[in-house]
Image (cartoon, rainbow, N blue to C red; front, side, top):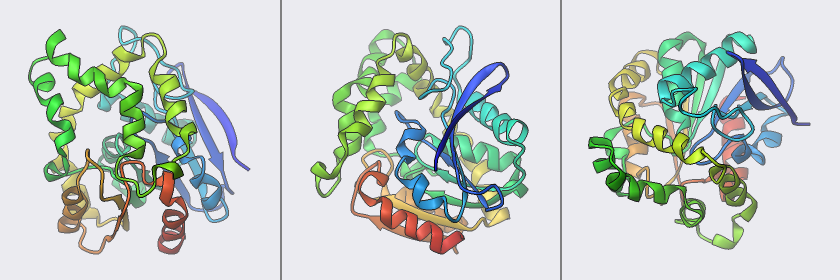
Length: 282
């Protein structure tokens, strides 16, 4: 049974899904944009027999608090700090594996770099850590990164539209009819909240600062050699196959699976990914 809970971190509510026995190895599922822990709704019960599963919503996402950018500075440093306090202080975890997808990579790898001995393993699903993994879909963002103006912001705002959310879920899949519309409808509901555009634009602008952290993360990979499973939707326009393969430079014993699907591979490949996680880690 999955439990739906919340806990205060620095006076703000963090919502999280929890399943499995606390005596089992813990795996923390870190979601991407524009989703939340909802993206793991099908994976959680498949892992709960073998793992203690924790899937939080970041500040500004899902059911967690979403203060305005005037009250909370939306950077990946701050999202990671909130998650760090949630995991180590609020929940009292000391060791766990992480599952990272999209935004989950910069959040999770900041935590891993700071607490390398806490990380027992990594599952990577279209979570980038290499420059060559940045796909052409990021091109409209580069002028916005260089100089944020109303004009450079316009194409980035397209990432918040319903059509783009549907595209993220369906592009590159073998059969778009296999993608549950609940997934992108749920994400869009939160994207369309009043004031949420300011939150997302702040994070999209800060995303460029993740690239400056890549060398740190590579150092963690090389020194720690974490047990790493990569299950990557190879048709993802945002994070490329080259980004998946680049992990093997620093973690040569990582196991790589390139799946014939897109950015949100769990939507049509959940059974396969769950089986690989259980085989590889449990």
